[in-house]
Image (cartoon, rainbow, N blue to C red):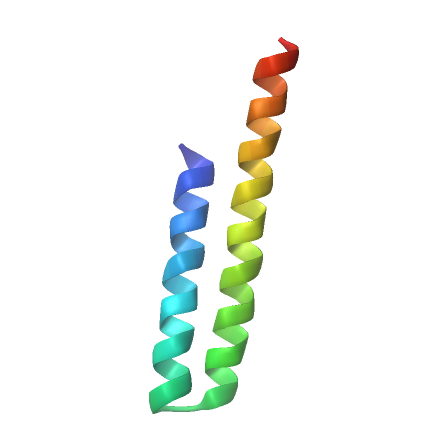
Length: 57
């Protein structure tokens, strides 16, 4: 369940980055977008790790 939550948090960060980039300060949007992409990638890596553990068990 945690990888799915991590991916969802990353999506929220990306969405917040888009909102901030268009309305307030572009640099905040860039930072939030990069953090969101990194969070999504970590969530995907966690999913692959879980799948790898289940296939080797």
